[in-house]
Structures are given as structure tokens and as C-alpha cells.
Length: 185
Image (cartoon, rainbow, N blue to C red):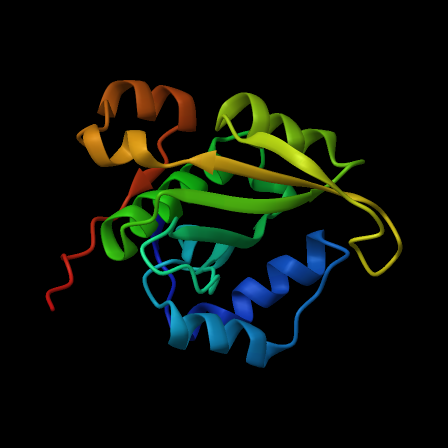
């Protein structure tokens, strides 16, 4: 299984993963908008046949703060049930975070998570070290509250991005990362 930057050809697979796993669903033009506006911030996990089995949809916030904090946002993260507990969600999140720092000089990343989603909350809070910033009442269409979470990305700017191949292989059961060539201005 590989992790790579999402392409327009992946959008239907991303939507399928979303519809299969999450109660918040998006129309195709929303995925296309992300792909065209922030092409370097979304990643997919694909199986040996090239099928999308997980994705992260990222963007940059338009907060209008001149010289202020540059905040990325995770719009959606989904992994097909049979591919869960393999480290795929964490790897997708880390790739998106790294891309936000390298491509947009992001200093933080935010997201929302359902209060009832214990697995996701564990990943974000315990695994990735996001902090709860507050509760947004009735954030979701069905009326459920969301935790607003945020993570500081400054430590990624000062630390080299390295991967311990042996540790990664042991934790992800052979999941590999496909390196993409650097974008030049």
C-alpha cells in the first residue's frame, strides 16, 4: 500500500471512502475545489490495485491576518474499515501537516471532530498531540457537538523530516510512502 499526493483521478475514490465511512458527506465539486485550490495538501492511501482506501483533505484557512498565524485545516480524514489500525490515518495526517509547513509556511493546523468519535479523538489528541480549543455546539448537520482542535506546527519547521524505515515498516505492516518530486516556484 502506498501514500501519495491526491490527484483529480482520485476524487471519486475519496468520495467513496467518505460516503462509506462518515456521516458528513461532500458533493464532488467540493473535492474538486480543494484539489484545484490546494493541490499539495490532500493525500491518499492506495492499495496494490490502485484503489483509494483512505484520504486526508487539507486546506489553508483564509483568516485574513496579515503577518499573523498561517493555519492549515483538515477538512476530512477517512480510512476504509478493513485498512484501519494499520497507521494509515496517522501517516496521511503527518503528510498533510508536512505539506502545509513546506508549501505554505503554516504555523498551526486545526480540525473538528465529533465529541462521540473516540477513535478519532484518540488519534488527534494522544497520537498527533492536537489540543482541544473548545466545543462548537451543534456543529454537525445532525446537531452533534464538535471539539475544535489545534496543533502547533512550529516544531516541524525546526526538525528535519526523517523516517525510520524499520520502525515505520513494523508499525504499518509494510505501508510505504511514495516520494513526490519537490515543487519549484
